Length: 194
Image 1 (tube, helix red, strand yellow):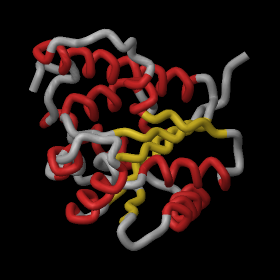
Image 2: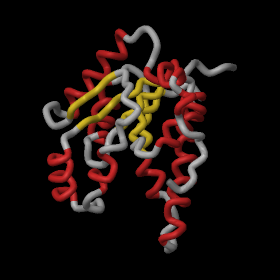
Image 3: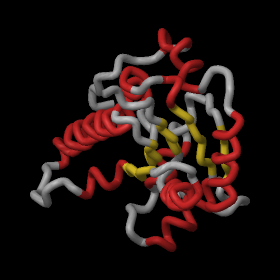
Image 4: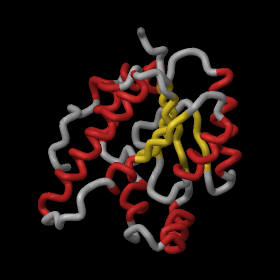
């Protein structure tokens, strides 16, 4: 039996931008059974053994590559997956473009001004300060989305409804399909520690 095509609702934004809150709201309102797959959950599953600083980036990259493959597998099984990720390094997007059926991906830009991100980081206290600032200039550099949200002005619920509304009327090429046409200018998917 062949599974029906899955759907990947891919939320991309910096740390503290509101992706997880939007995902939680989406799962309440989507018409089908859906799964929230945040990249942070994969990092949280890592064993607690100490990692030497010079090996940390390689550890993170391997986990992220595995995360991408888990998402692809869930979608290939016919599931609706809400992905919560940070495309702060070019190879991450390139890897996803290689793995995901581009017509089955809705790419959502989750935006928030830097001062608000920094305020949220301080209020949360569970993230390294400055993480959002490190990601801010890089996370949206590819510049192509199906839907965009600004969480400084819209609530997670409002963003979720905006995404659901887009799903009900989407047609034409997806952002992932358009990004594939730009593929020649992207770096190879294998990370090199940069």
